[in-house]
Length: 183
Image 1 (cartoon, helix red, strand yellow):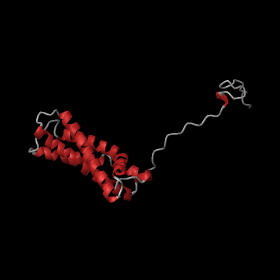
Image 2 (spheres, rainbow, N blue to C red; image 1 turned 180 degrees about the horizontal axis):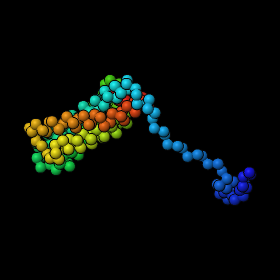
Image 3 (cartoon, rainbow, N blue to C red; image 1 turned 90 degrees about the horizontal axis):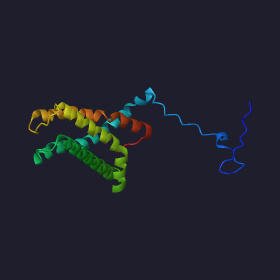
Image 4 (cartoon, helix red, strand yellow; image 1 turned 60 degrees about the vertical axis):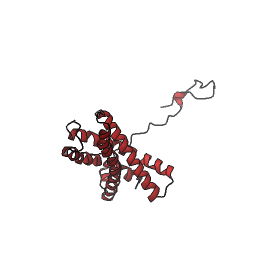
């Protein structure tokens, strides 16, 4: 079977083939899901767990400090605003600690250390913070508990566990696919 002749000029040129006759680049296919073996590397899981624990420490430090201290200075702070402050505080302390680790351990310049921490950890930090605060709120029964109430401190256990588990697969995938990590 022969190809149809294209005689329509393109862009005013009589010798140029019409767009219908030019070969088009094939559409790229979506990346296939990782094979089952992708998720079975114990060494990468250990490294991802250690990195996630470092990130969790930074996030929890700022988050717990904000959730505990802000109501002491501003007792009538709305709960939604308190949680937003806690998330921002957790992100800030985690980025600060990640940047310090990269600066001191890896000897990166300050600006490069901050950019690296942002590029490699921000998504997992945001996920960690959102999950921690949601679980914390649910564990407290949707109420604001005071820091001297034992239930306040008990609620942090499930929140920290969820904050650790939520970004762990992402950390593993980043390490396995790209060899990227902050520590």
